[in-house]
Amino acid sequence: MAVPYEGQSFSALRRKCQQSGTLFEDPLFPASDQSLFYQNNRIGRVTWKRPKELSSDPHLFVDGISAHDLHQGQLGNCWFVAACSSLASREALWQKVRERHSKDIIKRE
Image 1 (cartoon, rainbow, N blue to C red):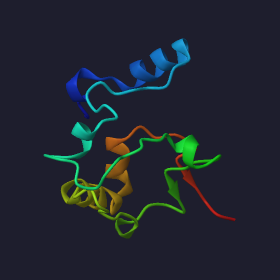
Image 2 (image 1 turned 45 degrees about the vertical axis):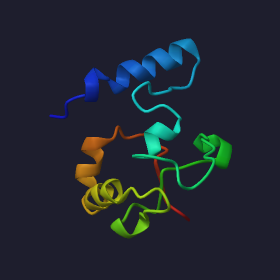
Image 3 (image 1 turned 90 degrees about the horizontal axis):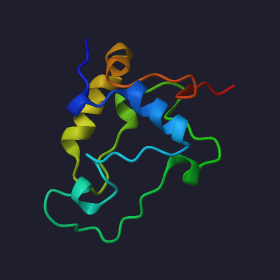
Image 4 (image 1 turned 180 degrees about the horizontal axis):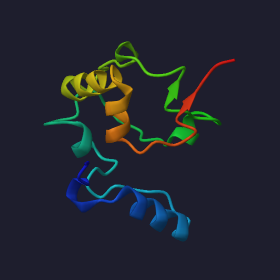
């Protein structure tokens, strides 16, 4: 059974946001350079955006997930990408880590 990180309960956090009409902002992972970089920001100004700011109909996965879908990029987050790639190779494990929602995965027609 999964143990909530730092006592954070997904369903309790979701309920609180729905009741207050606010979007979740994680106090343990704030939208700041300290959350992204081990030492100094070496890539320049970072603009944090929510999925709806990037797409009118955002989805986490399209046509399923594969270990080949993930790329490190400029942040130097290879450990995170490696962990997600391992989980992506076994969807049942991924679902244990993340609460599933009907809009997460879409199939192209």
